[in-house]
Every structure is written in structure tokens, then in C-alpha cells.
Image (cartoon, rainbow, N blue to C red):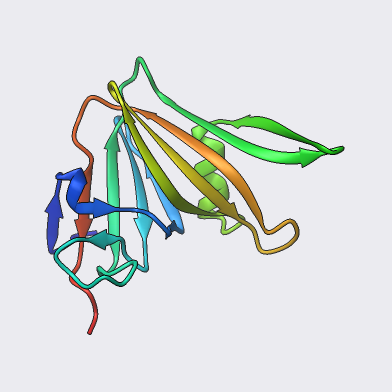
Length: 146
């Protein structure tokens, strides 16, 4: 899809409280689509405040992407690892929505603390999304619908 604007300055964009309802994987990139938009500092203080948006991460093949979901089983919290393909399938089939909470930048990697939303009990799971990348993240978006 074509978007009107794009940027790579991570300090001007935020995915906090934004939900991806679809995702795709190309030969080198992971792309999340946000139908309700993302946060861009030139617009209002509403969250999210753009029109439809997508965010592209170029994946470093040596570092890859790791997906960890924390579930409660028998009075314990268990970390379950999912493949990136499993995450994308669950998002694209509507079984899950991925809500981004916090971003932590490391050396050639990004950690997102996220929430996975389901349509039934238990409703949410905590999630960690580790993305190995040496490239700038590309934020593409349309202006807000007024």
C-alpha cells in the first residue's frame, strides 16, 4: 500500500498503545500494519494520531527475530517461544492483535514489550519481540482523518 508520508527518526514516532492487526514478512523485512495509526510528534497529543500506518523493520539475518509469550500455567508464568511465522499467522487470521507498549534499543537490536490480545479468556498475554536490525526502522503513514 502507498502511504503519503514516511520517516526514520525513531524519536519522532511511537508505537506505544498502537495495535497491529496484520503483518507480513518479505525476504528481508518484517512489516506491521496499524489500521488505527501510530503516534507522530507533529500531530495532536492523541494516541494514536496518524491515519493508517505501517512500520518496516529490516531484519539482520544473523540476529533474526525472537517472539516470547508469557502464559500462566499451574500457578506459574511460563515463557513460550513462537516463530515469527507463527506470530504473523495468528495476527493475520485475527486470532491475535499485537499491541506495542515499550521500546528498548540495544546494539543492532530492538526489544518491544507488547501485549497480545485475544477475543476470549484470558484476553491478554505479555509478549517480548526482539528484532535484530542494523537498518533504520521506516515509519509510513497517512495524515490523520479529521
